[in-house]
Image: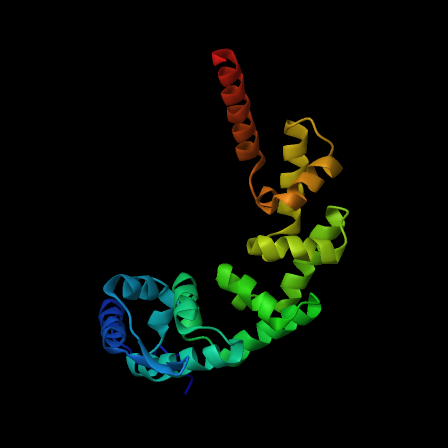
Length: 229
């Protein structure tokens, strides 16, 4: 039987309460820096976990069995601290029960395709947890296509994405549209605005409307300050 099998499970409300109880009782014992640490979950953290409805497809006993072991396996595979992984998984709760082998493969293969070392890409993924679950093919395609649309080489754009990890997962078309439209609104050519964005990576993902509003606000501030002087 698959570990995820909703057959024979109680109605969803009852199932949710049973899984909440499992996490309330859960204590994950990890060895870190020569000490034994206990990882547990606050009521608020548990609510965040069970709000991700996929978990309700698991039996409570399955959750009790797989979550602690997979948590510890991910620490070993990714060479990260327990609290860092907990914080990351709370943002993407499926990481608590997804196969550690799949997570590790996603990281290693994406890093290889991007010509990065595993540690560097893992640090980026900790800031944007979706990267642990996305396919390496998709990540690499996003980088290559965005770089081409922006007339940048892959390596240069990869370095930008390391500073703004959401760019690894964002649609190349959306990023290119952001740059072109923001440049138009600011009366700049695309190449010049792209060079600015390379120094300020959030500009690749911010909407052109927000960019223009911020620019207008800055101009008003400087104008009024000049008048005061």
